[in-house]
Length: 378
Image (cartoon, rainbow, N blue to C red; front, side, top):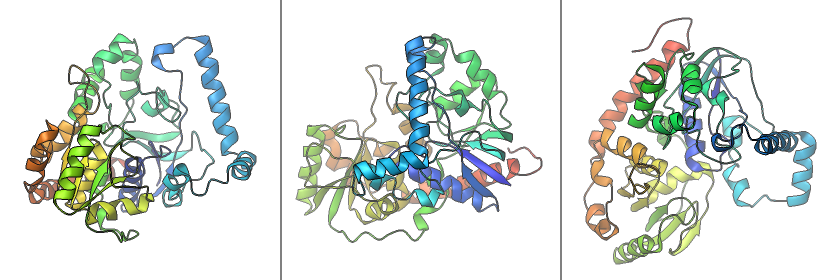
């Protein structure tokens, strides 16, 4: 079959790349051809019905179309010459996904798989993320639509209901032949939107086996990784990590995005990030995929969940679901002054590996059942 994947494959982020690549490899292992399908971002929910926001959204789509055209790409290359820029580094492995600057919308395929990543987190704002009914299957040019390990992120049923979009999103999800999510908040949200409980699967990076591929080597040694969105780790958190690293004779490296305090900042290619994690002695992160990279490479790590004042926003839901589900809840850092104490405890990767192995079979069986002429997964 020709299988389309609709996910966050154009977001300049290591996690976005590796989850897309891993899902692609999983589907290809079942004997199918994969193509990535782009989607349009609509006016955000807060400005729904606002004429100015609608026009702005239309202009953004025109701009994306032009940038993806041959002429637009040539002009961009001539004006910027940005071969070494951060965005160019982050998109340097697009050939591994089989994508180019040119966007492909409404691609005809046998099955469209929506996910993984936060494809259902429709309260986000950004050029490649936000409110899009296409991410809920609207206007899909496919014989079947399913999701795999999709996430609502910090979007909850209450928020969707508050903004008056719960019904239309629920109607879209009810047209899916199979709904798979990756965290407990998404299970609850889908259940309340549709009246039916979805299946829960692990993120494809956890079950796709990509950590065993022949990636570009890392020639560094003797270091600890800081991994988070740009300057989201606080100065106090970074200083505590710096003190811990130096006390163990290690260099503190901010990998990917820079942080307030570190010895060095490295922005590697997406095909080098797993080798960097494998070579590291320790990891401090506050991200979902930073935790996953540590788990699959068996690198001792701690994770700082981020939430709002009620402890429900940010990434609390998905990180709690991830760590609890893999028997790694002790990697959650409640206070930065406990960093050294938690890092000195060896993570139970043997237990998490057993869970991942079992879940890998479930994931492949789920995909296999829908990437065929019939059958329904458990």
